[in-house]
Length: 109
Image (cartoon, rainbow, N blue to C red):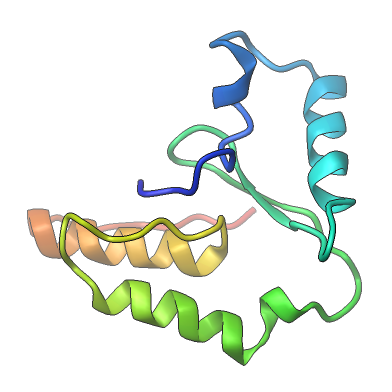
């Protein structure tokens, strides 16, 4: 997965397992980030965690969707990283399907 540096919260724990308290603390820090809350975070290479802000954010609007749509159109190996988002998960599943010919699944819980 092509991510921006710092967006995988597990990667910054020196390979050690995160406790519930550490995970909650890292998610809280991302959510309280300026100028806008960072509501999505990767946990490893296959999991996306979302914190529901119960309000509309710029990162959820049409302009943000356009960024992910552009990333979606770029199927080269030299794609720029995009911030964690459900759109990025869909992009990566599609690209993996195109590259391997294998079916893909995305599970929401």
